[in-house]
Structure formats: C-alpha cells, structure tokens
Amino acid sequence: GVPEYLHLLAAAACSELVVAGLNPTRRGEALARDAALADCAVVLTDADHAPLLDGLDPGVAVVDVDSPEWTALLERHAGAGLPDPADVPVGPDDLVALVFTSGTSGDPKAVRITQSKIAVPGRMLAERFGIGADDCVYSAMPLFHSNAVMVAWPIALFSGCSIAVRRRFSASGWLDDVRRYRCTFANYVGAPLSYVLATVENDDDADNPMRVVYGNEAPPDVRREFARRFGVTVVDGFGSSEGGVSVTRTPDTPESALGPLPAGVRVVDPATGAECPRAEFSADGALANADEAVGEMVADGPGLFAGYYNDPAADASRLRDGRFWSGDLAYVDADGYVYFAGRSGGWMRVDGENLAAAPIERVLRRHPDVAEVGVYAVPAEVVRGPGAIGDDVAAAVVPRVGADAAALAAGFAAGFAAGFGEFLAEQADLGPKQWPSLLRVTTDLPRTASFKFRARDLTSLGAEPAGDRVFLRAAGATVFEAHSPG
Image (tube, rainbow, N blue to C red; front, side, top):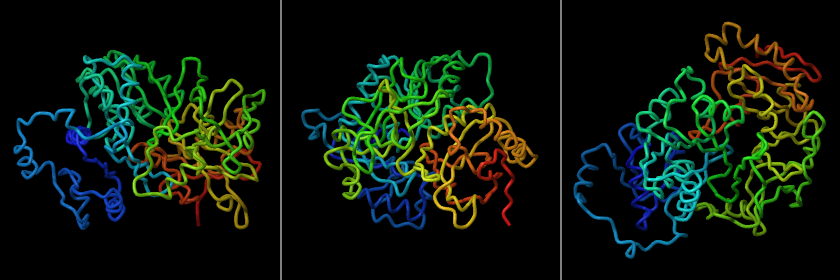
C-alpha cells in the first residue's frame, strides 16, 4: 500500500481514467497477462517492485513513482485545483477501477468496479459504525484487493477522516501503528487477525484507540479473542469482489453463521437450480442432511455486480437465467441464518457423498493447539492406493506452539498427530466421512496476497511432505501414521 495508489484512485474517480491494481505476487508471464487483460496504457510501479518487470515487455510506458521522472511530472501540476464536479463526465455506473480476484481456483479475473460500488459501501459502513471526520482508518490490506478499495478507502472518503496506509501488513507492527496514528477503524480479510493474536500478549494491549475492526473470513474463536484482547468490536461480514451477494451479521446471529439470508438470495442445487431444503442437525449439532442442504448462494439479480473486464465467458458463467451465481456454498438453518460451506470448486466427493470444507474447518479449529487450519481434497488414491475413486479429506494445520521448522523436526508434529485422532473422536458433530485421512502439519498455509487459503497448492502435493510433516489415516482407523514417501 502506497499513497500514490490512493492518489490514482482519486484521480480516476473524477475523470475517465481507470485504475487496475496488479498483484505483485504474480510473476513473469502471469503478471504480463494481467496487464494485457486490463488494457493498461501505462504501468506505474515503485523501486521495490520495478524488478518484477525485468525481462517483460508490457507494450506500454513504465513509470517508477520513486524516480525523478515521476517527480518532474508532478511538479508540472503543482498548485492545480480540483475539477468542478459539474465538469466531471462520470456517473454512478461508470468504471473507475479493475480489481483482480484472488485466483484461488485459476487465473484471476478482473472485476469491474464502478463509481457506485465504491460510494455505496463507503457511505453505508461509515454511517453504520459512526465514522466521522475525527476518526482514522487503518488500512494494512493490499490496495489492489477489493477489501481495501471498497471498505477502507471509501469510508475515509465519505467521512472526511484520515487514513493510515501500511506498505505491507505486519502482525508485530499492528498495535504500534494503531497507537501512533490514533486509528479507530481497521479492515481485514482472511487470516490477519490470527497473525496479530500470535504475537506476545501484554497487559496493556487493550489500551488503544481502536473501536471497530471489520472484515470477513475470521473464525468465531479468533473474533472473540481479538475483541477481548484489544478491547474492540469485531464485525465479520460476508461479500466478494463481484458484489453480487453480501450478508450482514446481526447481534442475534449464531456464532458460526454469516447472518440472516438476505431477501432475494437463495441457496440452490447447482445442478437443478431448485432451492435446497433447510439444514437439519443431529442431537450433537452435526449437519445431518449436507447432501441436500448445501448448495450455491444465488441472487435474483446482479446486485452491484458490473461484470468482468474482457471476459464474456466468465460473465456468462456468473450471470445465468438473470440470476447471479456467487460460487459460494452455503446452507440455511430453520431460523433463516446462512452458514458458509466453502467455494463451489471446493466440493469433496468422499465415498459418494458431497462434503464442504468450511464446516470441517470450524470443528478442527476447536483443537487447543491449532492456530490455523485449511481443509481441502486429495485424490482418494493418494491415501488408499491405486484404483481408489473420488476424494479424501485432507487437513493442513499450523500449531499454536512449535510453529517453526526446528520444533516440527524435534518431534512436536508426531506428538500432535498422535493425539489428533482422539480429538476428532471427541467431536460429536464431526461425521465419520468428515474425518481427515491426510494430516499435514506445517509452519504456514499457502495463501494469496489477500490472505485467502490456496487449497490447490496442497492438493497438487498429494502426500509429498515438501518440508512439512505428513500423516495418513487408514479407512476406519483413528490413528494417524507418519508418512515417508519412498
């Protein structure tokens, strides 16, 4: 995150320019592909990221904002006033930015961000959380991602408050930044709250000006502990870069649910388009009818979705029969609360039954020694041998203690795995088919630049350790045995 990026967004908002944020974790031809897809007329970079363009020919001018050339360009406009709004030829449906999706299931797509997709959430969130001119927004999420562009920046714009932008997220620097800049609101997506909680706790952590932390995909136990430790309100919403479906959490929402299912949104069977029946739960709280109840969240119309840029096939896939197909799996309880169940590409077909990753992850996070967990599919033949059909459940965990290579090598992973089966057996709401057959104990989960779990990286490894400790569980067994390929 650099100030120049926000300056460019502001310029685009009052002109006919469009800003496309390129993901610096992309490399080589993948990065060139993104620039070409966005029809970039000029590529702006800084000294830190300029080497990423070495050997590439984007076909357009490249300007380094740390260079004398950029300084000279700015000096030509020193003292220039703001344009008269009456002279600005833009409206609410005009394009202002392109935000690339995280690319968790393939090449990123460029989401069209219109003026209204920034203005509407900015006003709504500023009013919802009482953000005024005396507040300060803390933005440490990547500015090329929708969470920063549609949550942090527009709140500051609407309220007229300050915004503190960090070049890169730092768990150890989070509290120091909040205190130094008197920040009162912060945004997040994915794992950052867990990373902050992993730092050493001090007695005065709650002595800070932060009031509200808002984002998505933080587990319930992480939200609860973060609120306690730092004396803040943590609000976890649900939405996507596309903007077709959003869910607002209410005070009475069950801890594991996203919130009430919004009007005009249904959970449907992707194969038939029929609405799924309400979820049923066993006496132990386990989802008893997952095959029937889990479906895709679909909205009656496009909502704020303005399409993808230069990708008509993706548009056609997302908008079918006049409805917006979110790609997000979910189920709805008898009271109308919706629960996230994973991405549509993340279905696991285990012994003829469809399983979703998110409900399993929620159970595994209860383990007192688990800091992070990601559930994903591996081909059944990885665990059961050649000829096995379908998938098996795999789980990658980062322990709260011993989360470094030395500790794993010293035997912590083996001790952890030895007790994992006993833990699973104690979870009454974990069905037998939901038990992981492969356990990967690791120091870090693969994530996108926006902190989303990249399951396909681990699926492709199968049972290869790749520096981790891998344990396998035979069908019907409760013990995980160390796996050594050879």
